[in-house]
Length: 113
Length: 117
Image (cartoon, rainbow over all chains, first blue to last red; front, side, top):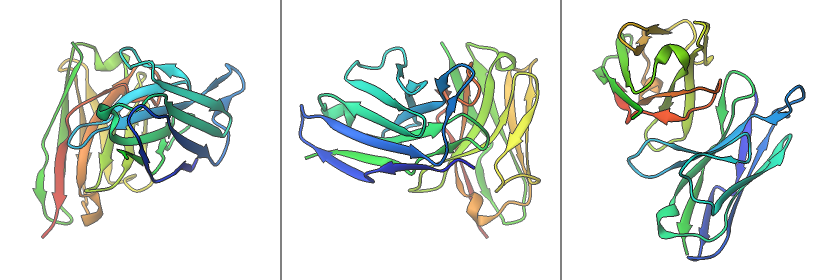
């Protein structure tokens, strides 16, 4: 199984400042034949289902604000919120869809400082 | 508009069985990769099972042999038959789907399953 590890577990950032979340996979999720990274990011607010933000490691889902961006390749990935807004308070998960079992990181709780 | 609505959750005793249903609208489940993802109270997300467009199914080790995913194209629904339920199966179960294998693009609101005596 591919283990996904996020850091930090929680993060407090001032409004308007940058937030960066790291995600590392225990093996590469880059498909050599495409080549694409099978890595997604989700946002989950309290009492709501998760929402897809980023897929293929860096492709923003339709309707997602451009302050959210994803980067990385292979085993190391980053989600960046360039200018934190109050509505961005949530738990963020990375997920690999390279192979079953599809696995998530443990989540990073993003709060306002 | 794409919508997923789960039903069938509730309180069940250990060892019991329950079937969850996910009704889709706005897209055909047959053309999408449909999954169940669960979230134990206060915990993270755990993928449970997927049914591919061609009908192939996969399961997490924790549920293999106890849970069965299926699809009814005529009703545009996906189901999860859960047998031999354990306390550790207690969670909100989300139905999720996408056109890309393994991705979870659209989600239902979830249905709570509580396994307790």
